[in-house]
Length: 336
Image 1 (cartoon, rainbow, N blue to C red):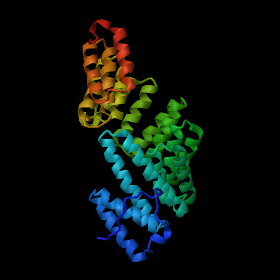
Image 2 (tube, rainbow, N blue to C red; image 1 turned 135 degrees about the vertical axis):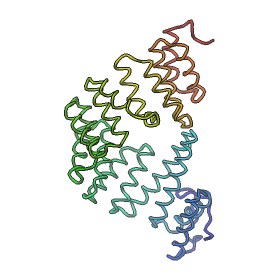
Image 3 (cartoon, rainbow, N blue to C red; image 1 turned 90 degrees about the vertical axis):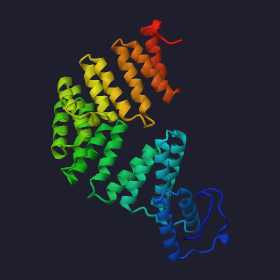
């Protein structure tokens, strides 16, 4: 393996240029290959040591910055899985910084711009992410994914007219892109255009009939159009495994709540929690189960699920809010 080693992050305390011997193309290739191998084997310390030094010695080597960004992103995902929110946030930010530097070097690379936008999104830099997606779309107007990602981000920002236009551009490129149809469905729904929303989501599901996420969005359109029972028919036909993802459970519970069956809504959240108990976000499902049990008048179960959520995320404001509701609803059942 190549013997490039360093402990300094690019952008930190840098050696003087005179202290850095020139690195030829062969050494760059060997360094990249070694770093890639270490990254794939999840030996992040060794991969980082190689990549940091490579970037210091060859700061305009885009592949080194991109690979370092990918290495940081892998570590961020692992930190999220462990429930380590602050370390994950810092790692995502560092990953984005490497991609930000890379696109400044290779600013005509649409694919790199798209990857940079995804990293910016994960780092919470929504304005930067949108800039990258929109620039990618201009550089390569034949790729539907670029305006599609821009549309979804614009929708999250509440810029519905711009989001609709961007999603429509994606469909001009690829009329059979189901997520573009679904994105337009959600925009139409947000604007109160229920018939148009239903038409769009039906088309999305025609293209991709086995996508459970699209089925959940179809159910959402039906529920918000005043047809919660029809929404339930779509979701109750799923297996328990398919009902377990948070987005599906959320729609199932909302549909039960809409027909005044909070106990069944609570059961939907319980199923989701048990299936996803290892996820760091599982506490939210326990809170929702507690909230629905409270609405059903089952305060004992509500407290039990609230305690389960508290054991996972004791400082969460959502837990405190439901606890206050429970104490007002049934102060005699509140634990000491």
